[in-house]
Length: 111
Image 1: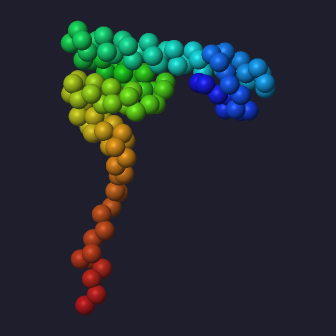
Image 2 (image 1 turned 120 degrees about the vertical axis):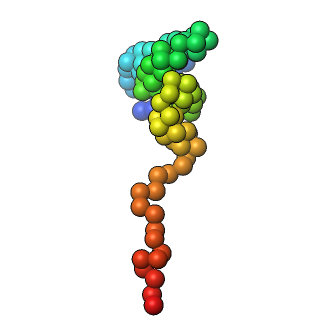
Image 3 (image 1 turned 60 degrees about the horizontal axis):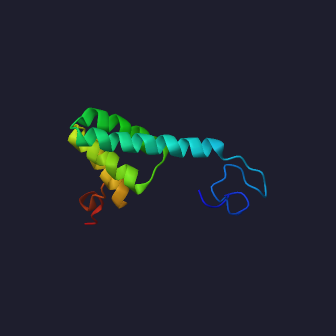
């Protein structure tokens, strides 16, 4: 995080805002954990452990939702055989919206 979301002051790598004194240490810890799980997922992929990759990628995505973590999670789901989740994540990444009930024109046809 580069700017304080409260007062928009530059953080300059600090975990506490110099202007409004907002504490971001928990946010920094969460970002660090997300990065750890992302790197662990990549390491698991390289060693061919796809279930472990799936677990770490899912944890990374739950901690910090970014397009990159979503794609990594989708790939992990695909490689571990969770095809439904892979499709959902792909749709989320590409902005595809779910259509609950398709409009049936034949039902409403005027005779």
